[in-house]
Image (cartoon, rainbow, N blue to C red; front, side):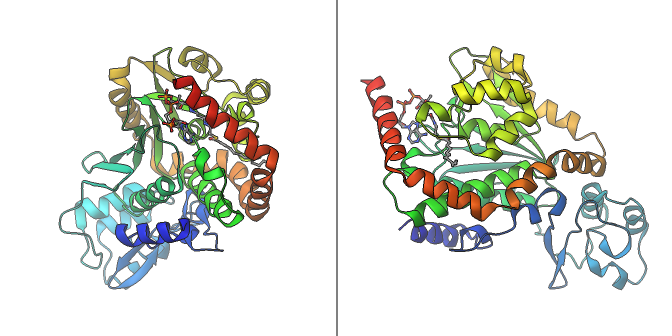
Length: 374
Ligand SMILES: CCCCCCCCC/C=C/C(=O)SCCNC(=O)CCNC(=O)[C@H](O)C(C)(C)COP(=O)(O)OP(=O)(O)OC[C@H]1O[C@@H](n2cnc3c(N)ncnc32)[C@H](O)[C@@H]1OP(=O)(O)O
């Protein structure tokens, strides 16, 4: 059922390129993200592949396409970009802005925004910055459908050479994201859990290893998977409202944050703080989160988006190739740990979540959430 839903979604949204959603198959997320990301585009009807960061990027690996040699006389723009190893985003932007070679199939009018049921993407072409707003009522839980739509939107941005930064936020002030959808982990079968966990892994890998600057504009509570989503970003701006909380509270549900959730947290706030936060399932107020470095900046609620945008402009001033290589250097070892054992991690999850005791805990947690309301 879930698979049918996802396939139907992909067809409707035209996002058939998402390898992860093909049953029994895992696409190499990091292969297209961060260090290993290869951006695909089109030139004279021939697919071209963006070079891998960290590889030699002179000569035929110019991001505009492996066909640069076939351009009879490289223009000054070609020479300029070929001379800057690794600097493929500005290079691509230059090609686009200054030259727009005829062999690249750019749309006549670039799309500024697109949305589907659960994700709104607004792209400011002049800044090269997109804002992704999650809208999955009532609490922006990360359901399989949301993950699917998010990944489709993300892939579109990854393939848009003009997009250099993404701001992640919620369409509903007060709740950034309630984290993984507990209903996806309750009362379903192993095939469903497998499909769901693949999507969760894929989202994390893509966001964590993205070459784009990613800034989280956290305009509400952000427990568990919501916190993880924010942790994938390069910088976190949070609304300074003491009613909101953020943290990896998995143990409160009777479940365990997987090792890569833990690694992402450790990389952000350090080992000792993570030990306490994870074991106790701590949900931090914005002020506490700032103190331990879980978020980088607190601002009044109505300034979250504008602050995220101004932080973005600072980050985008750094030469892209240098920033990307640094990000990759910092994050790749962590992402590789999951990449090396994705299948085993899925098996662990499916076995763990299928246990009677875990199912009982999740049901009780949902019941407690409902009772809290009454
Ligand atoms: C070996 C290792 C292997 C691996 C082991 C396994 C690893 C798994 C890792 C898991 C990671 C996760 O993210 S697990 C998910 C953790 N998430 C949470 O703990 C958040 C729980 N939610 C909340 O705290 C609150 O809902 C909050 C987000 C602050 C919003 O509060 P509000 O008062 O505004 O809204 P509520 O009334 O509580 O909720 C509105 C409705 O949404 C539902 N709802 C709330 N959160 C939901 C959620 N995450 N998934 C589904 N449904 C949710 C409620 O039940 C309500 O349903 P109705 O009553 O029907 O309307």
